[in-house]
Length: 393
Ligand code: JHZ
Image 1 (tube, helix red, strand yellow):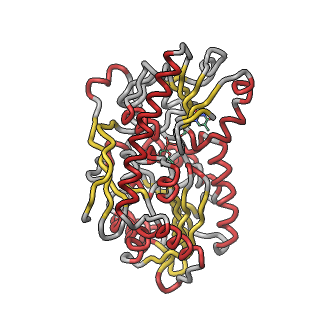
Image 2: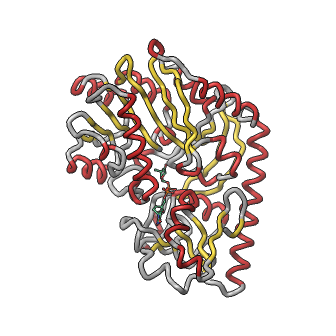
């Protein structure tokens, strides 16, 4: 790739590398520099973190921890079933804790998951799960053992894989001639509009525009036939692709590409301006949290997200500003946040009357959280977000 760097997010740890105190000294850090590929306009990291350092048998993120996502995948599955032939053969790449596959038939659904803890979990549930990374070789094994697939699905997985050519050509190989490849990932247009720079961390080596995806998919025999703009994870795109011979793109594809050109996703100055906005956010957020602490407020964070790893490490926000982070995920509780080492605790007994202000690490679930924490809001508790600008909500 012919990369032009535009953003330096500094030294960063593994975003989901929640750790114990005894592990602090050996924590891994890397330089998070972000670039645009001059040929395809793909937004990508200058250097990639080795996948094995992020996706292994201690992976902590569980997709099913929010009601929003459980509902999202259940509804999507119902609608996909109406598009596909009856008893479709389904493959999910990056099945995590099974939040998507649980909506499908165990006999005809298989999965691929490199985090062994979760591969075991879905195998135990009865879904044949290959414990490994998505590769050309694995795609060939799957074709030999199961034949071609009517649906290849991936949610928040494609943008995690550094080598897109290998990834998409392996999908093309495993897909039936009239099959669908459907995948969702955070949208670059949303990230730029909302200044949600925390979508960028080790696990997201790319943030996709439709413009860039078109190049990568087409050179691997796949054509985008439909784009859905969806609200999950702060604004994502669901891409539908098919093999060249079966593809009949609808108007949503050209509409999205036109919109992306209008907002300048194919011009360098858009990203230079974004980098300036990111720097402003750092100053504003640090200043607001400092002011709250100086006023004697108890400030915590809500949701130990990968995104907040980027925010806290880039903005220099540690336990001096945020006393602790609450999170419902058992795998994250009683550990410390990556890099800046803020304690993580269960919300039970900790998101209580003593809290004055909560930074929304999980800002993408603001609606769900505000509904759940109505008692906190009613007694005057405040949330702070940095998306699209730093403010109380
Ligand atoms: P959430 C992860 O990013 C990592 P993160 C990954 N790379 C990716 O692409 C996206 O997901 C999709 C907690 N929570 O989903 C649960 C509460 O505590 O924004 C989660 O730990 N209480 C695969 O980590 C976290 O917040 C609640 O009420 O940025 C949310 O993480 C709710 C709703 C959530 O993803």
